[in-house]
Image 1 (cartoon, rainbow, N blue to C red):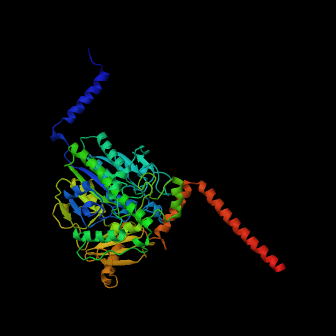
Image 2: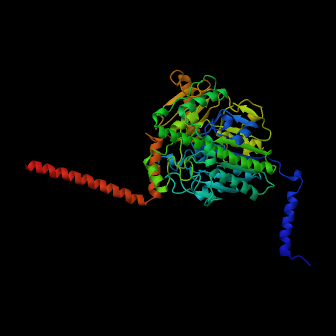
Image 3: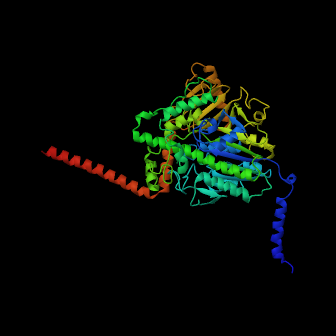
Length: 595
């Protein structure tokens, strides 16, 4: 009996697939895979390999078999860092010079400030897909809000992407009033989250699923930007319980401990002064016993969230080992900026939003569903040690972050060469022997670190090569051992300062008055940088937190239009009360005059 052709065709396809799976290894594409893992708001010393308290054995194992960078800088905010990471270009040249939450109206829509990748800007996914790679991503995107601006428009075959700056880690909902919901997109189409969602687990699940659904004959590029440890800080209870009591002594003790470990690990020179504190830093002992317990618990959740991320990274590593792909995979692990200083208990609009959405900031179920976790500025400054300050600012605590590279041909080593986040893309391309000029996109501005990784050079930068970064007025420029930096309000004062980082990595002693010639040269280099990449001046009197409140307030009313009626009612009531009071005063004065 003959088999019908309709049944024969699927059988032949399946047989061909089996033949392909059993094909000799010599016919397989031998080019390395690439996995980029990006933590959100992790400080230089947060991973165990850098001396952190959280258990991160999988990240530490990658550091142990690869290159651990100690002088690597990102930008002070997430979107610019992500744009530079994926494109190898300065953020102003990509269209994402800052984040929309802090963007003033004077810059809105200007070149470099479109808040989405501009035409001609190619990502690593664009470039590698053109070379035959399959390209996947899962996690936070935050480089555009429209469906047409999601990863599928920038070289990714499969993607599950969060368009916002963050979102809840347990539920399908927003974490701040700027966003009405959590804007997740799968392959450019709005998507919902599963009932059992937890962000770090979900990101790895999606990556493994996408790898199974794409052509196994091709090497892959996987981009995994995690939500850990962005606010709201949330983690499974089994991880939180491991850190009980770990932070009970407070942030001053953690600062000193990390400063000592930084010296012992060679992250800073022996005897380097402790980093300067930001203004209005609260003393641990000034808090009530109840508040100290609350803040210690928040930091426990923060460490647990890091460990949970590492645990799920371990699941991906085990999957790659089981499928025989681990040894031929390049791993890059980093963070987008320093730790998050924002509080969840000192902003009226955020309090209104928390009430509207059912969030709480108390001790009950800390880190679980419904808990809006944060660590605040004091823990952020302590975590950022040995650097000064934290996220938002181009101080060392805001932009000096970890970088680990491991993979074929990379020997275990400590790398002290300067490196910038724009250097990752050109490094990957050279590693894979891909000519950046092979694609017709805008030119890459970063430098390949391969000469350093291979041992052919001590540094990718010479003593006269300036490196600069600017985000919403917060600026830094490096030249040799020196750095100039400027921080805008509310924490900064807008003044330029000069530091010798070789002796003073904590930025404690301003040399601008004692070394005017160096200061002038570096300011000149910075002026040339701003002209070259198109930095716009900040409006007079710009304060990033004031701008955030303006932008968030406008979005809050847009997201919840019925608040107009509520606020209008309050305003009318207030005006009526004032009118009645004034009328009563006038009547009383007339009576007194009549008497």
